[in-house]
Amino acid sequence: SSRYSSWMTRRLGTNPVAVLATLVLLSYNKILQTVISVFSLTQLTYININSSESNYTTVWLYDASVSYKSTKLILLFAVASLVFVLFLLPYTLFLIFGQCLQAKSNLRMFSWMNRPAIKYFLDNYHAPYQTRHRYWTGLMLLVRI
Image (cartoon, rainbow, N blue to C red; front, side, top):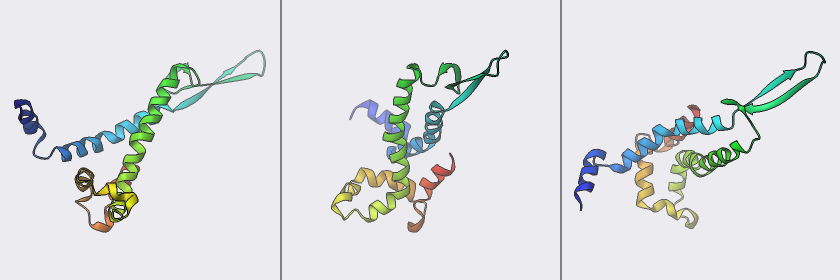
């Protein structure tokens, strides 16, 4: 054991899994708002005074100088999509259906739920609730949106 690991342990407390679970839970809403803002758009209407024509253009809500289908936003869309698909959606489903998956962990398909790291992580969210209400943390994530 190095001196840095004991220093880090004192900073994190006695249960680093609980600290990690709390940090993920607290940052979830901000990450989700950021992903949603990436896909926000608005329409600008240009009306020609001399004729009755109007032109529409779709722009990014947070910077109207950037066209919504421009190449500048493609990378941003890709990263936001990856964050949503690889982190936000599984995390939400994991919290909502984690108790059901643990109950079915004797099946071969859900045997990965028997890993101690996953159990410790889920226990930080589900321990305050009765067994039949352990989906509540996941639903509260959806309500906060």
